[in-house]
Length: 87
Image (cartoon, rainbow, N blue to C red; front, top):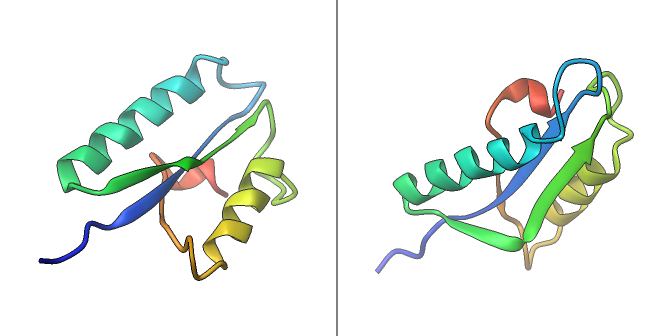
């Protein structure tokens, strides 16, 4: 039996373009996608950044995601709704 892919979720909103409700919406859509793909969302690996521009990678949530991705014991697949949420 093949093990299920594990994934982390990263969600972000920019203060000038989106509202706080954007993050729960992004998380919901990512969870739905993961469920369709039969991936396991690791609840301890949900990362968010609120009211932070994507122009910099110096974002707490993003840095925590990147740190988790380098640990062999937790190396989850990264799941994001849009590529521009990371960039």
